[in-house]
Image (cartoon, rainbow, N blue to C red; front, side, top):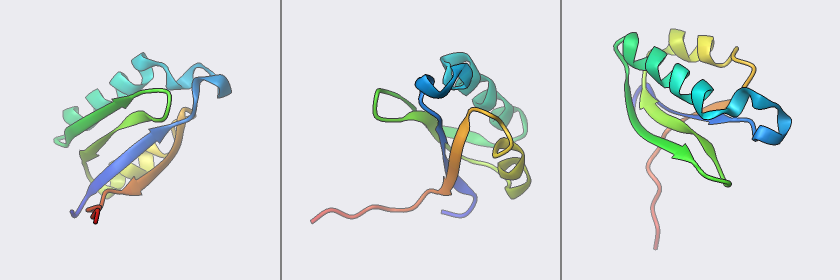
Length: 79
């Protein structure tokens, strides 16, 4: 899953940076740079999105004040 990431936003209680608009703005930035969005997460448990984009864009997104962290997307197995 090369260049596939999950972008997790800070809870709204930590500020307004995790608003739906901020998530949509960064997702649009990913798509505008040639990347793609696979899933959007907007629940009480997690706010953010999963997508594929360059390492350079990952570094840029990590600087956004509403982003809590970005991690590599990976397969999850259940038994």
